Image (cartoon, rainbow, N blue to C red; front, side, top):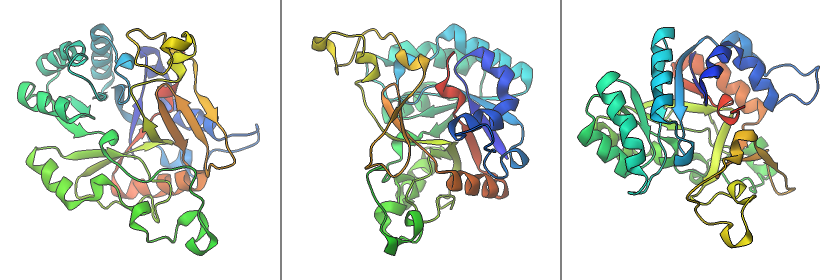
Length: 300
């Protein structure tokens, strides 16, 4: 298995071998419950670390932190990927020193862009970096309020509906566009209602996040507004106390078809266990990169 791990701080490098146990914190309901079928048997050693954030510029590491990540990854024989979010013209200069350092000192490092403007900046000014398209650019149907009907099969697995099965990165036009830009990899989630969520349809290299996919994100952050006066709630903040460092919120409703969590400005869905089992069983046959993001929700 081509396994990568998204981490938030340097201390998490010590726990890269504990992915199966950490994964169970999202699924176990009692001490006797076991890991998803085949998890430990199919999950090899982590060979790459992800740092940064694809949803919030405030959660991007500092230049000093990126240097420590890069140096530690090199000393451990791990490849490095840096995630970047959507950014405004005001925010981009904050990240430029990271690109300068990586381009000069670690040529070939992978940077994942989730903003077409950032992509153009990287292509024009930082030719030594390897670029991949992030999952924020991949749009698909993820509404947790959707209820599959019996005629559609269990969990909509028999549905041929293109609304449920298609996403941006499945389109032939995007393959041609990415190839023309010399971008070889697209990152994505498993769509929750897709007939075969592990089926690879893209001609580009693929990376899949687990055990969470994301539903929606935005520039305003509900969690960051908790300690703000009413007049400053639900507006972009110049400074943030980063309450997302202390954990996620589980959002519950009878309308939801699967478990939903909020971390910072983004809402995620947890893959059903049978979907995770199928992913882990099949991905080893394709060589698809899997990105474990469970550590990314824990900054303690």
